[in-house]
Length: 386
Image (tube, rainbow, N blue to C red; front, side, top):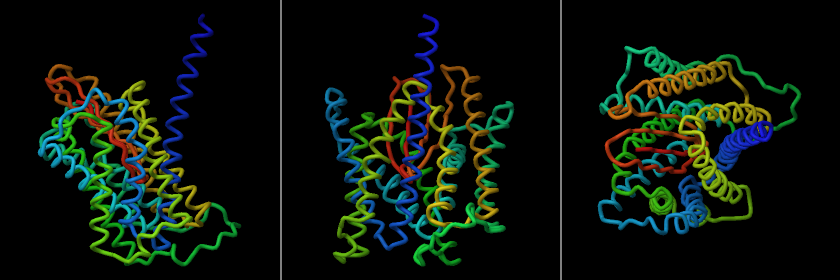
């Protein structure tokens, strides 16, 4: 019996690890595919419109079969908050991320995804949702982790350093379209900063959305549909050429299907399973792996040069993120449960990305509600527990 119990425990552990590794692999593939097609001239709003339409089709079965008996009437107020949810978290945040990804590199862009929890933490301090907790050891480690993440992001932005290839004898001929000028790199950096701010704002807005519409799958379905409509409307205002919206049997179509089926639907289910079995802080611990996978893959597959500044910044962000998550976990455990008033935030992701995981836990006096929203970028995933 003891042996069977040990084997069963090992199988459960290995399945969870394999699931989280799969999530990071999906995010890595999403980043690389998106970078290639965007460099080839794919219209970003067309990509977003099609991608989230596919995502809606993949999530629809879960919404109809798993939440059929848990339906709630959609009021005008609910429609409004779902619209804002799609506008802030997908249309604006992901749109800016795609523009930043096009003008920089996949590794550089993924670094910004990993500082979103820190930006959200700062916003929560400003809006008095979160306390600094400088009087505790966990709180101090949390602050140090946040500072390291911000310092790592600044290092990647301001310091380039020596350039080198991981494989010196590679025969990869880098397409001219993949080369990024200095002016475009600066523009892309501002786009990525804007994306982080939009994502952080989106997480704050989730608290209000969950009050009016707690059904996670239906909320995801409606949000994806709204985001697709918003992207199509904005895209038509910017470019009405048929060539910009035409779908062909090429890498663009592969990226759209891949992002909708794997980076959204499959990742959504795997993250929901992980959170149910291991808790909200388990999945985010794997998020830095996507950053490492993207950096190595981009250098080996796309022939992208590695720079010392990006390597140093990446290490700082990974160390800072783990410190921040450890501090938040310890701080939450030490708080009294009835009146904790604490928020736990962890990031995956992306949609990255793209999809990455973000977790916010806000204990209140109301009944607990869990909502998981899958979104990339390089897909961004979010879980909010109240």
